[in-house]
Each structure stands twice: as C-alpha cells, then as structure tokens.
Amino acid sequence: MTQYLIRRILISIPTLIAISIVIFTILALAPGDPLAELAMNPAVPPEVRQRIRQSMGLDDPIPVRYVKWASSMLRGDFGYSFRSKSPVIDLIRQRLPTTLYVIGTAYVLSVLIAIPVGVLSAIRQYSIFDNIATTLAFIGFSLPTFVTGILFILVFSVKLGWLPMIYRTTIETEGLAGLWEKIKQALMPIMVLALFETAALARYTRAAMLETIHQDYVRTARAKGLSERAVILRHALRNALIPVVTIVALSIPGIFTGAVITEQIFRVPGMGSLLISAIRDNDTPVIMAITIIFSALVVLFNLIADILYGVLDPRIKYE
Image 1 (cartoon, rainbow, N blue to C red):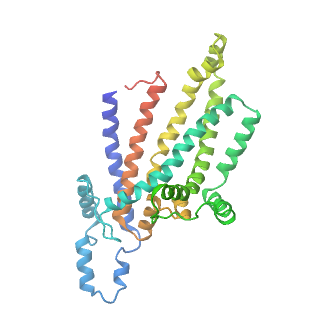
Image 2: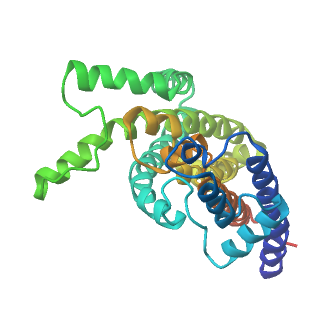
Image 3: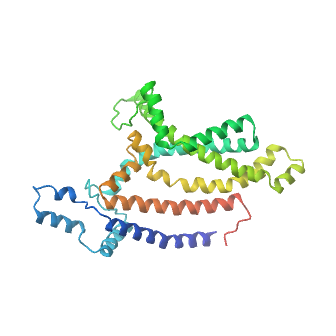
C-alpha cells in the first residue's frame, strides 16, 4: 500500500505541472489586459503605467513569468490579485467558508438522501416508491439549476415571502434571530443544489444496485438461506457502492469552486463568484490559484477513491 501511494503521488506531480503550464500559457495568451482600466485613466502617465507593468512582471516572457509564479507557489505564496491588490490567499480564505457552508451542506444532504433512496428504489423495483423516486429524480436531473433557482425565488420569495432571494453577508442581528436569518438565506441555494445532486446520485445508485442484485453471487447468498437484509447489506450493497464511491469522491473537489450558476443567481459570495469575477477581470493570479488547488484536490480524491476500492472490494490489490 505504501509503495502504491508513493507511486501515485509521484505520478501526480508531473500531471499537476503539465496542467499548470497549459492553463498559465492559455491565460497569458488570452486577449485582454489586467491593467486596461488603468490605461483608460488619463490621470496616470504612460511612464507610471509602464513601471507598474514591469513591477508586476507583465512584460516578461511567458516562461519567465511561469517560473516566477511556480517558485512563489511552492513557497505557499499565490501572489497578489491584479484587481483588488490583496493577497490571493486572503481572497480564498474570505470566500471558502461561505462556499463550504452552502455548497458543502447541499452536497452532504444529497449523499445522505440519494444513496438510501437509490438502494430502496432498486430493491423495490416498479413499486410505488420506485415510481415516485424515479419520477422525482428524473425531474430534478432534467431541470437546470438556474431554472429551479428562479422557480424557488418566485415561489418562496415573491409569492410566499418566506425566504430572502439574495444572500447577504451584512446581517448584524445577534443571537438566535441572527442565526435564523443566516439559515433562511442559505435555504434556497442549498435546496436547489441538493435537488440536482440528489437526483443524479440516486439514479446512479439505483442503476448500480439493480446490476448488483441480479448477480449470481447474490442469488447464491439467498439460496444459502440468508435473510434479505443480510443479502442486501453484506453482499449487494458493498459491491454496488464501488462505482458510486468514484462519483462521490470525484465530485467533492467541485465544492471548492462552488456551483457557479447557483452562486450567481442567489448572489452567494463564494468561490464560484470569485472565479467568475477573476476571469472577467483577467485576474491571472486568482484564476491560477483556484485552478491549481482544484487540480490538486481532483488528484487527491482520485487517490482516496482508489483506496476505498480496496476497502470495499478485497479482490483489488495494490501491487
């Protein structure tokens, strides 16, 4: 196992380097100037603008800029935002808690709901429960989040007036009343994301479970006289969860960047909105920091998924 982990980590290093080179080069060659707003200001002389460009390294060749960025990143320094002039790591620290609260809660809820629903739906195939769950999953999966988001705003904010339509970070109410206001403003984005994720994961869990419960070893377990509960929990469910684990593990890094569209609809100040504003402003340091962290998380959770394979399926050997 130790050799396997070391080998996978060593393989991931050139992968991350290649990803960072490609993204950095694309961003460097992309049209747009991060100092365009400064260039439009007649109060800033051209020579001052040129000194600012030189201080930011924007006139250096792309390989030189990449080496400077990579060496700083290895020291834990992601640089400064071209737009806000703040350290990039501070911007991420400001946005990450909101994203983890809203997007993370929605994802945890979807996993806790989808797997039991998918398993029960497969066990009781073509029953009333299966038909209702399949229909709801189909609706939730078919509707884009921007549609359900607008629908929820019309119903719960405009029509009923129960929930605020915009997420605010300026709530100053203290005590339980303030806590309730913070929960209320997060309910709609959590429901929208949880509905979509639950629908997709439940359909996948149902399909994996249906494929498993018709295998010969499951029939053999039933023929030995085991109870249906023991057959499902000990034999079918464990194997059915192997592909589901991959989907769950590889989806977790997406929490870091947030659900971009949903954050835009409800004005949630999370990582998704930070990424969108950075792309719009050609803010290369912010884009690179988010991208490289996201890539590292994908590699990490890929590794975790592989390890869980071995836990769920003893036939898998790490050699």
